Image (cartoon, rainbow, N blue to C red; front, side, top):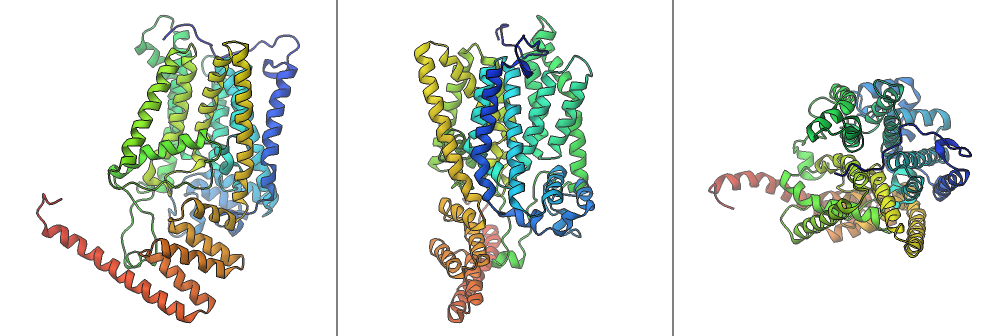
Length: 546
């Protein structure tokens, strides 16, 4: 690596006529405009109501109004209140998530507009921190402003901002960006800045488990930007040691978090929900459990998932409440095509970044995005392989990389600056429009699950939840129609037939109920027989039988 680099500012001396962070009044006004526009784009979401997990987590949660709710959230998993006698109830240890819910419930009750406003305010704080970290890393106000503008309006953040339950991702990202701000600006040794960074990092871990890899980001920052400054002429080994010393306190915090998580969840739930037994209710289709997948299936699905995340980040119209990304259980052309596309894209990005004088910034952006998305690639621990919310933290690295690339292109001359300016204005406008269009899908359960069914029509869980939402809204006929459409798409889905039979019974359509319940019993019995016959068939065949 070249020794010449834009060093992050440790201590800024504000020139005359500047305001906070050495910003001129014009630059401060632009930053304020970015924040105001971001808020304005999300203000329509204040009309939204409660969606999906909102009901269980805080609307119908009677325990949330007791102080013991917060205390027990530090002792047990985040969903402990569902069945306190059978713990853990989930694989999530996020005490500050429940603290946020409890604080909102205390201040605003169950009025959704105020809850949504606090989420918008939190996103505005994230935009400001995005600017500040980008400014410190690059030493350029322009890079920070462009990164903040992209981060503020990218449609990938819509779910994380407008859905009240989706607090862990934006809140933990705010803590991580805050920790980076104090880390970069700290004084040598055990300074106040380092202590504040450690406290903020501890808060990030107690908000969302993805923060567990933040010490790797600290290591990447120290190795890329600081080691060769502190040890002039030192080799790579010595520089790595210096970077390890910087990230060691953060590793200690991560270890403390792991111990707290282990104490709350136990070993079985440490890395996700363990595989459940196949009891009679599960076999017959009365109960649907989370499906677990083999390492081979995870590897085959991974390239498609990564391509989907790249599309969500880059294309304005792709963001939404769900995505049609299904598990791949057998080698298929899409696996090899996606893997090849990833290799080509990665190679092109590496070559372009290495040729750039800003390669250090690009390297850090890659480290930030990869380490923040990595926990979401533990696919077997997730309910759905792809979710926009998991891009909230990684999108900072993406936004900064785009900002630096844009400035580098613009530096070529006046024509390039005009072209880049027009292109960025068009992109931000498309992002803003897409964000405003997407946030309406979180209006209520009906709007949310209707959109989910539109995107993934073969996902039976969405059909069932949409039918429940329609029944709650007083539209049982449409609920029955949705379940009928689901059984038409997948005639062998046992659980869908059960739900449709129950729907007919509730509506008083006895003849159709009898027919549908008989169909359910036939499919259920056939499923049980297949499950019981599978082990015997496997044992009766030679070991080398494919």
